[in-house]
Image 1 (cartoon, rainbow, N blue to C red):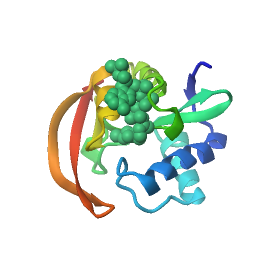
Image 2: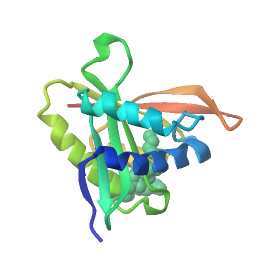
Image 3: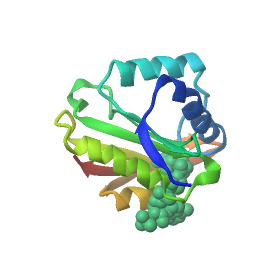
Length: 166
Ligand SMILES: CC(C)(COP(=O)(O)OP(=O)(O)OC[C@H]1O[C@@H](n2cnc3c(N)ncnc32)[C@H](O)[C@@H]1OP(=O)(O)O)[C@@H](O)C(=O)NCCC(=O)NCCS
């Protein structure tokens, strides 16, 4: 079965939330610990995607959402408005089949001609060989690692900063 990538609609948000909730509760790939409520997901979609300049793309296989990539402003202060933070998550049983790569290909095809944005960043909690491979394949460069910046599931976690010019 082949994967297609398109802009998310409000109807996709629960499926996106289900994927992210898995990683929130069971892994250190995200530093969130609390699950976002359906209301928080809806508000986020309205503010960032519908009203805002950011992207939420979903990968579809067999009619189902099997992964997503989203962008948001890298950090809150206004001078960061041309820098994006990227978040990408693939359904846990469908990793390493090209879904993440399909999402990145579609996202960066759009961002390359988008003059609003100048840099893309991902902050990767280590270890995460799959995420590092995905980012390096799509032109990201490692700019440094913070040691023990995170603490989740009773362990300190290093985070690697990856950057891509847009
Ligand atoms: C990280 C993630 C998004 C990658 O998406 P994916 O669909 O699994 O990856 P793809 O199949 O598109 O593979 C992309 C590249 O990673 C490599 N790769 C995939 N899984 C790998 C693994 N476990 N170890 C090493 N390399 C791996 C692939 O070989 C490919 O490299 P190539 O293009 O040089 O051949 C996905 O695995 C995932 O959702 N992981 C859990 C959540 C997460 O870590 N999100 C990122 C947070 S920063």
